[in-house]
Amino acid sequence: MDAIIDNLPLYLEGFGTTLLLLVVSGLAALVIGTLIAAMRISPVASLRWFATVYTEFVRNTPLTLVLFFCIFVLPLLDVRLDFVTRAIIGLSVYTSPFVAEALRSGVNGVPIGQAEAARSVGFGFRQTVGLVVLPQAFRMTIPPLINVFIALTKNTSVAGGFFVVELFAVGRTVANARGDQVIPVLLGVAAFYLLITVPLGLLAARLERRWVVQR
Amino acid sequence: MTNVLFDAPGPVARRNSLIASIAGGIAILGGLVWIFFTLNAPRGDLPGYFDPSRWDVFADPTVWRYIFVAGVWGTLRAALTAAVFAVALGIVFSLLRSARTSWIRIPTAIVLEFVRGMPVLLMMLFILLVLNTGSFWAVVAALTLYNGALIGEALRAGLASLPKGQREAGLSLGMRPMQSKMLIEFPQAFRQMLPIIIAQLVVLLKDTSLGYIVGYVELLRVNMNQLASFYGNYYLFSFFIVTLVLYLAMNLSLSWIARWVSRRTASKTGRPTPNPDEENEELLKGIAKANAESRQTGQGSI
Image (cartoon, rainbow over all chains, first blue to last red; front, side, top):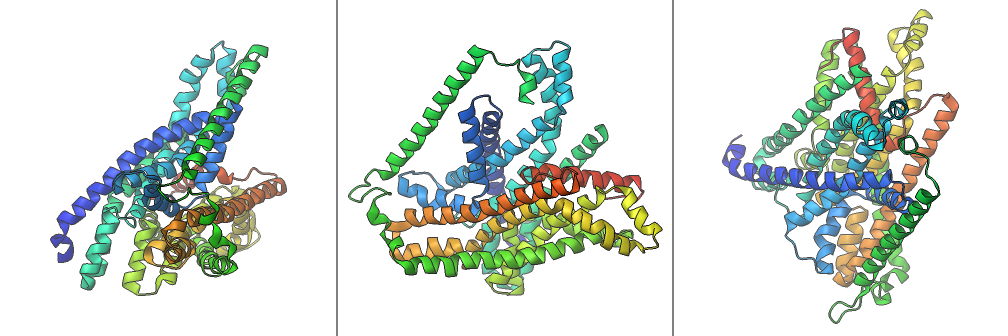
């Protein structure tokens, strides 16, 4: 136990980096993912095609390989950024197709009768989308989006294997230094992760429950 | 959805959309060409990344043999072992989680919540350092535990989505609850959730690459660490592209199988089966339904 208390500043520093990775790459993934989702439902065929290929390509590439690209291959291409920024780029690119899929399935999940009803009472495109479809789609999108962010939280640990000093990397360093207390040291790291993922999971479950009652 | 939102496009709108499509296509193509030429530009006194001299190592069959024997097989071996154990563990988890007695159900729910909230990488490190198993079993055990938990939840959702009459029919034939569950409900739930389970196995296959960080010898380590440092940084980019292509080939073919199974089971059972592309959403719906049902029947969930 004292291994955790002695290294608490290190832990908190790692936790801070994890939160930084989570928030910044989460926001970036939200932006890229929204763009991709918009492309996927756009009337322009070539954009649709591009978004589909991008989604398939990124979703079937392991995160470790994406981060490897950002850390070891980007310098070969004369990109000079620090490790944290490059890890954020990798995490946002990797997360973006999952965000796009969550958004798209939300819009597709609104029963088509809703849009038909709106059209039949004379609503135009903007009114149909703004007043009828999006408010419902938004609600159905939030729980899957939260789950994407939970996955992102866990995925930030992979950056710890690539020179970014976040929770996992701190845990590994401390565990190597204190070989006698490996179990408490690593459980401490796990506790910090659960501090983020469990509340998010409970929130998602709460929202899902409401959503199920509605339908 | 989109065809309801707009009025049917007239000739002008159709022409505009075609022009936009061609313009977008040209823009995307231009981007790809730009990337190609940027990569192919000479770096200092070294040639560009698509220069034949950067790729000549792949003419050597021993390199390919090493990639396949050590790398691809290392990845597949870990993935196959973990897949078998994960499905088995998922079955156990789903049965425990939907047990009637609360002192089995609630601890299982807590364990599942704990496992699902933790990074797989941390589990690998934990097993590696604490249980001292060696890197292969650390990778396999962590992947088994994590994916077993998710497959378990998927199967539970499948059990909950069955019509009540199935179980009632089993019980009325004089089967014990366990018999009805194993002989009647489970086979149907399994078939219903097969596409999602296969989609989860794609995740498992991708996650074997985490073994790179804990020192397991798989595709990424073989190509990017052993071979790339043996042949030098000159070939790093070429090895990266080969690794990427191999991973894509493995994962895309497994994803394709998931889709094929989904179509096949859908046409056989006549019921819509979950689409593996929307695995998260389907899983959410199922789990939410399972939770709602257990509340209704008084078996409160946590």
